[in-house]
Image (cartoon, rainbow, N blue to C red; front, side, top):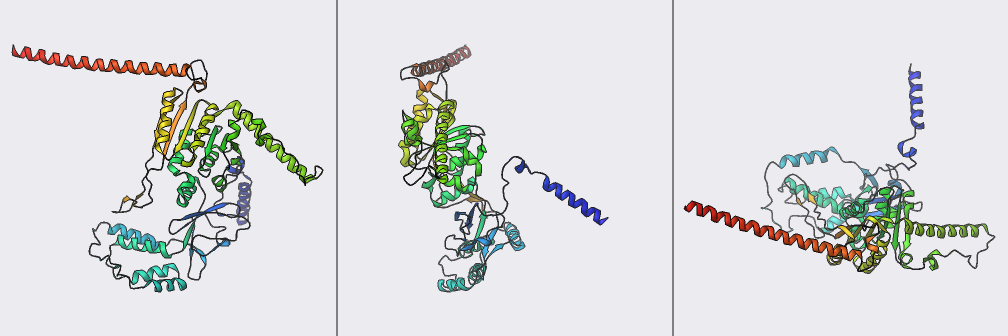
Length: 491
């Protein structure tokens, strides 16, 4: 009987192994649940600082701030979200939360029913009996947890503090003295927060909520076609490639250089193949075929046509140039669904140039989305869009985000000096089509577009006059009615 059950179990296991998973049947690589070689990982330390690492074959250890090097062997095989903490012996081991942490949280919740305060405590920095030298000496021979316990036991005011104050004190000391990191899978939100912490100007101040709004207004979907200039470390391009799942086209315009930081660190795999870089000089030129970008490759002075390696390189270059020509012809023939512009303050002129050449390839009904950190240039462009008659739904968006601490009797906004409630502005509009089926934006000045604007202005003026006349008649009728009732009451 036992042998039969074992055979049945083995057959079921082999059948389960033979059944393809949804990711395998769709041709997509399954998402790993543990840290492996050949991927990126984000480390977050106890002070909430974040850094991205590439776990290549040459990677031996990870260096995070002032922490000692973390051997790669301690990271590989760990599940995402795991915590590595440095022990007393200097080893990095996985840390598990114990039941004592849950018990302390429950005790703090019970203590929330009793109102207490720390108004009787003196704030003169004389409560700690240990000197900084003793603390540094102890950190050299003990772990961070022992240092935090020693600081709490040598504090003369720790026992008299409220439960909330004690928890806050321990958390603050742990952030300073306990060396630990959290393993995080790279995602759009985590990468955006990592780049914002390292330098806001590097990503044009593009916060994650602004990134989500740009994608929403651009109507990014599978099979779409988009023309974009992205100066935010390729965050927007990477978000488009991830959301489109390898189906569609993203023409990325650039000048000088084309950074691909987020495209690389998001580990998109084959999905990033839909991104097609294209210099802005190609779109601005009247004779693109004469540019160096479209010219065919030639053999170098040290290369021989009969050499197999040289022939392979030459064939690869020819295929690359032919792919560029095909992409450019496809852009001119079919156009794009949306035009997205995300640039910094110093690239305002480049943004205007991309907007000018991009509108020529934007289909009627397509979306225009412009992100900037200054209000005045976008407000001026908003006025141009509204008066031109080429666009509808011209709107300016400004997002307000505030982070809150949510704890029992301690819910309040996070008060930090670097809290930026508003990072920038988003201008969005929809391109329209003329009455004869022609693109309105392609008309010459003084044509049907300006005539349509004049008709709209005249209609608006007439509506205002009629509204004012109706208000005057209503007011006069009320006054006459009051006089009539007074006269009738007098009689």
